Image 1 (cartoon, rainbow over the protein chains, first blue to last red):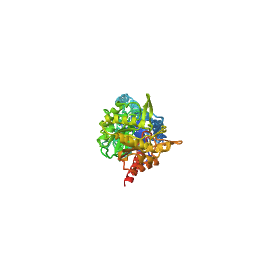
Image 2 (image 1 turned 90 degrees about the horizontal axis):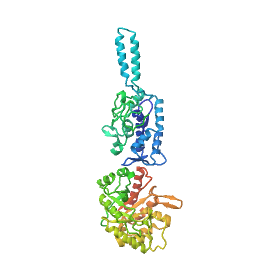
Image 3 (image 1 turned 90 degrees about the vertical axis):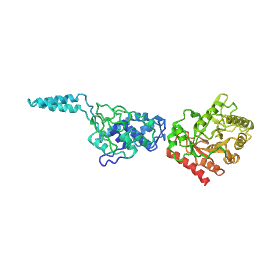
Image 4 (image 1 turned 180 degrees about the vertical axis):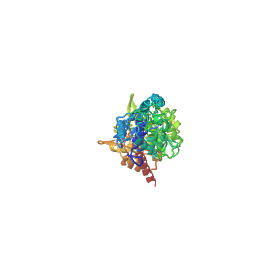
Length: 255
Length: 272
């Protein structure tokens, strides 16, 4: 399996990078991309995916094995991704990324986080006259920060993602999805896939209120630009920093 | 050989491998199963191939020209419509029957090689030809049995068919190999007896052994022995075209390309 030249830290597979970039849906896309790349599955013009070999040979990961098992008879392109995204193998993949210190349990942003911040500010102002109230200021600031939520990616995870580059077409899928673009080129075109086939991968709307980067929220962006949840980070073709905040592409699959 | 163009090396187009066929290097022509196409709704892939100038030849499996029942002109008409829709230089079917007594065999059944059966076949072929817009080629089938009281060898039977109908021949070398294995016929004698100047093109396909029987499955690799029969044919005539048939259990693009290259090597090796 191709591994990105990350320079330092754990060497991640494209599938792992895909998960970091946009959750299980993207990891599923990446697994499918590698199987296509290696000629282990065939995609027809009407979007049906079938395994070339019926014995599952060539799979490099559990997700790939699961995909090959699924497509022993023809399955629609988007359905392959959707099913793989919900496969039990994805939990194992996430557990691995957590154990590597690249992911953590995310916290969703509460809609009321700013209320606590306003209260803290008020107490700070009153604290000029009554210094004891400053203790309350600190308390409400901490509560506000807690309710602000937490990205699923750790700093190390974000760094891994930032270092990764779409140096081949499988990595392009990992970082941007089949429906994304690399340097203005649709990623699906790198696989010579008809647009109608690529469009069968469903894009789900970004849940703006969440900072759960584990893939439950999938943005409607086409090239991993927006949809990074509360982190507000951006992506480029040279390396996504879509720090787990919802991410893009990848037909669903909550974590 | 008026009316029959040089075709080169081709492959049977199937929807499961449409993108593969489009991408494969060195595909000079394709064949489509006529019954699976509708003239008014051609698959996008077939249209694309036509736009590239790749000849598309409809191949029928249901005319049942060797049957004793009247030819179903609706099926002939459909074949002709598909031929016109894809701009085909010719169409083809088999020397066989697939229906009798209201039953469908689900298999290409060999025709008894008697003069009576030949008369019926000739009449049916002529009727079909009158209703087709392009020339008709007929293919030898793989048989797991031989009808009793045959009066002609398969080669003689086809030679007389050609003489009386002016049809073209589509020679399936895999079927020749299968018949040699299963019913002991001689491919070389067949090739000696048929009018090779009426050869339209050649089919090559893979198969597999099941005990003592060879099955022409179109779902396994082409055996070297089948390529050997192709080589024997090429030692007698330069075929206008040679086409790989694959209908199931499709291998990787690389393996398909490799089979096409092997076929081309046999053809060009003999030509060179």
